[in-house]
Image 1 (tube, rainbow, N blue to C red):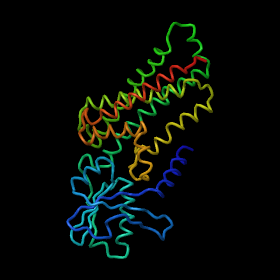
Image 2: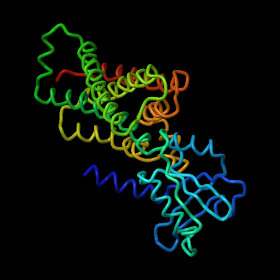
Image 3: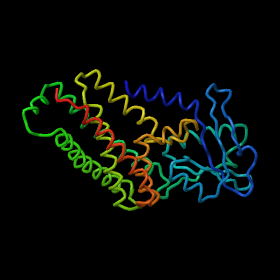
Image 4: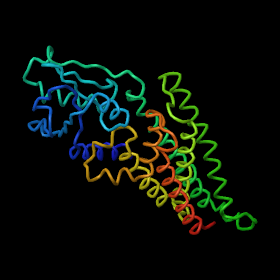
Length: 317
């Protein structure tokens, strides 16, 4: 059910989305400048916004996930620069190829130059997103659902007879998530390092700070969700209400900059978006503490506020 809803939502947003493509070259022809609409006759039109940029700006935008590909104009030739395994870039290439060269002999005028450098590959974009998604799911399901299930089995009421404080009890769940989440993240990093050659280009200490802030934020959210719920139906609805929108919108598997401009400020304020963007900055852009300090502060504040509210509302039975 979640997969079908994810696909339906993604399809509907693609209709509203505008793909951004950077164009490099001395002279930019009119057909690859401004905003264009392709595929009007197919029933599924796609809007593409072309922007002139330098090659350095285009590569940086690729690393940041702002764009999935860029064009190079060399005389009468058009060179597509993208990672061939990136599904978003593949689709954009097909849209442009059909829209720009559908009526021409494109064999002699277009070519593809695959992006192979570290930081520009789709796997470099995907791995930080998977780490962020793993942190969210580990906390929401590992803490939230675990507390709800324990309350449903009437096991939490036994804690009333003990001198243990609620704060210490709930903090133990957070500490457990730090240890288990750290182990899971380490396994993922080790696998992708050996198989794909990915690596952390920025500060390892900054990555640890973002990781801990993410654990704290989603642990607080999980505790708030589980503070009073004692029914499976309500618990499942609350968990999906929190996780599903962020999984779709936060740019885990694809570039969220393709969503409409009016939605971007909301998307960028989501905890999962902050976490994923910060991890990507450390991984790909060699970011240090200065670059991720704002995100860490926001995530930590989110965790503090939700933990405090959840602690106040929490009940043993």
